[in-house]
View 1 (tube, rainbow, N blue to C red):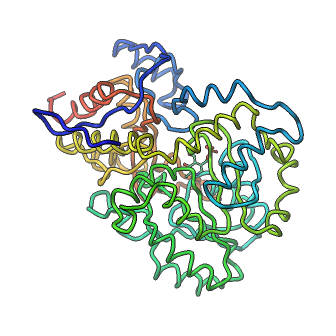
View 2: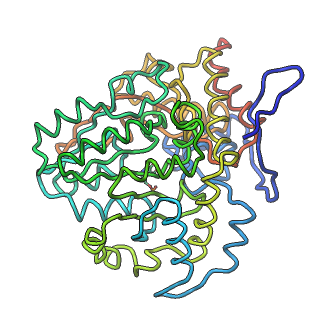
Length: 439
Ligand SMILES: Cc1ncc(COP(=O)(O)O)c(C=O)c1O
């Protein structure tokens, strides 16, 4: 993104695209929003989209597509087996990541299901920097357990650490020692940690952690669903990356791993997913699972149109101008809200702006779901739908008791290329209003 200067004020984030297709929004009066929220049982997932003004629930499958993606969707090759659309997608992925083998799947959690089915046996452990809800569910469903080894600072709501998603290398060594390398199904690093504020991981940390895994003969897996935001932070926050292109940084990260998977609902501005495998034998050992759970090996549950859109979207994810907009809008939103005294997760990460609900509504005890309450309040006050990222999103213990989340957050996602800065200003106004008025 070019550094555009303004004559009379500090730079603001700029959209490096223009809008060609629009969708009308509806802002209901506050009293009606309250009624809609009651009808939805105070569950924002039950709201109808037509009743929402700013849908900041997620960045998944709702990122704006480009004219080039739509053009690609007009020329797909429709075939059950051997579709050229699949080969184009696979070749593009090989070009970017350097992995020869590709297993298609309909979305990110489908990839996680395949990986868990292949590697996790009862009693085994999967090591992570931090879990994602669906990832963990597949592992525990098969009798495995998850060890989350993000650095302690990663769970502090506010600090200056540029890479709060980094795994703690000492904890990693200790965990392998404790579990025994043969009982570790794989090590999964999430590039851009969804549940703790979209916080990124440094290239150096990827290198160090994968070197430890390699030393112990443990398979390393990258969840690249949020990679595009992570790449932006590698480029702007990591000294060793500042003179590298986004493609070079991507390859440097990919080179560390045995397996990469992703949700193309995020990475690739479309809808779908894939598992990339470096080793031929490892690839063949998972191949049979795709037709069983997803579809034939050249579509994996995806439409050929989506594969064409993904292929273009991967290239777009390698352009700094394109990937900068999300993190820069988020940074702007986080800094403005922070200045108003709204307790935010700082520094801003990828995916969205994250409000620290434990502090915002500190009078609500954790067993009464502070994040769940705050997310409803944002809808009633502003027609803004965020996502609860706290205890309600946690899997319960096997005996049905509550498992309290380590952080109680409300995520205000910024789907890529969707909102304008004036809409972000509206969100800042409504969320901070609580801090600056007596209501
Ligand atoms: C880091 C991460 N991994 C995996 C997934 C699952 O992907 P999907 O929603 O396509 O199943 C998500 C979805 O939000 C995610 O953020």
